Length: 218
Image (cartoon, rainbow, N blue to C red; front, side):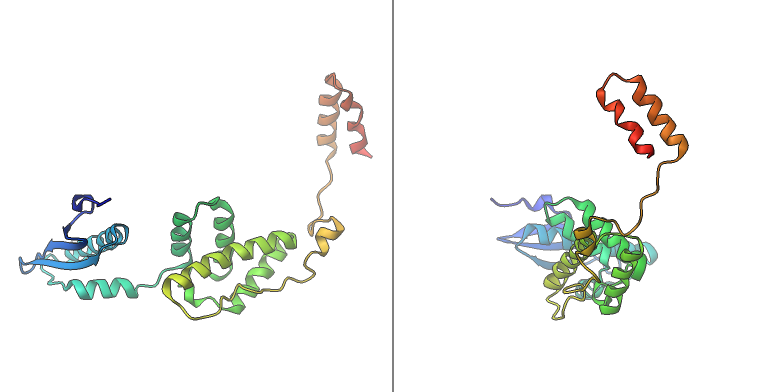
């Protein structure tokens, strides 16, 4: 099925290829740049070009721009961890909350930087921060896996030949907390006021389970 050229702003279509088509405000000449044959990719690049040109001409209406130079600058602009997270979640049909929680935790420790800048020291700091929060090793492992999936996705998209620093991370005493059935952070006991409220609510009910509630105060 062919996509109409009118569905992508500021483009024209010739045979199977899309071309960005816009008048240069400085010279008055029409500028044209091939965007390839993939409608989705062409639309994304066209939107980026339009936003960038609008920004340039907003600051300097007489600026004479070169589309090739503008597109090269866009390609060199580094994407941050959260940029890649958004792209990853856009393409994956998964619950976004685990990924967002993990990425947010890493950003709190190491910042939201060019995804290529994270190293093994950042990965270890990430693990230590999660441990200090009292999370179980299984939860920590899932957070690491969520971050690692975003990094792997970014590296693959960029054809970046480097080992993922979040791959193969060790967690001290991993699995021991699950085996013992304990949280790393002790749970606080009920207060007297909380127990009194529970007793009143239980005794006011008709269920036989109300007889079990006083055990909580032992």
